[in-house]
Length: 308
Image (cartoon, rainbow, N blue to C red; front, top):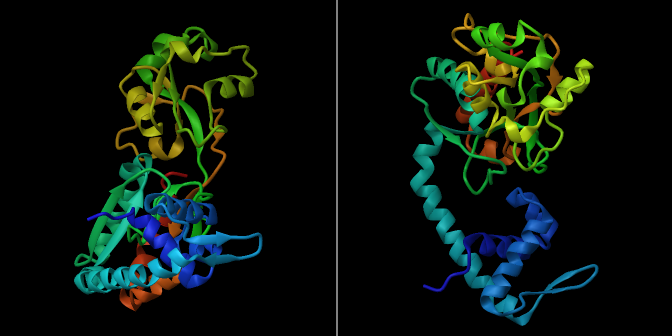
């Protein structure tokens, strides 16, 4: 079968049915630019222009008019049979999506408490990076850092964290206690890679500036960790000293072996959020599931009391 990408077909169908890229973007939970890009992919695949684009309007070409009825019918048929197959599962399962650094220390405890209240409700916990297509991959709650990638959805701020210097007591006694924080060699500093989307995250260079210490660490000599949870794990093993969000240290089961060598913390620039699909998507699921999703959200909010 010669088929264009499914997302391209969905974008084309929605743009025609709703009368434009902006309305289609709102339904699909993406930006108008993303819808336009998907339509162009379909046009490139077909070698045909589907829309005549003008400054104030979007008109179907002859090729677009010929293509739309079959595409609309096919997608509606797929949607109908999929709804039928998933109807029972959707009533008894809640899908949660989150990022790696939040899964173990924050989301998992909230899910455990929720399961005690609703032991018969199935839970799907997915670990995936941003952004996530919350409608294309049915999701009830997305728990992540910052919310700017989800402008079409409801957002609930949970808490804003602070990163503190963190190391084991043995590391502190050997490298910090004798001469202070400035004496820690550059090769023993653990740097957190927050991802290519962020440039304003806490860094060791920023921490030393804030502390008034004349030290500019050489990142090339240190250890670079892919995420705060990894940096926390490395520092917990005595590998070095890291800037660790308080959420991770508060959730540690045994705090006797580590120490915060300095009380100065750097606030993370953004809050952690719960992202909820469009209200219509939740209402369609029915009152029982809506109540359960709200109960799970309450448990996530309660978890913030531990992280701080």
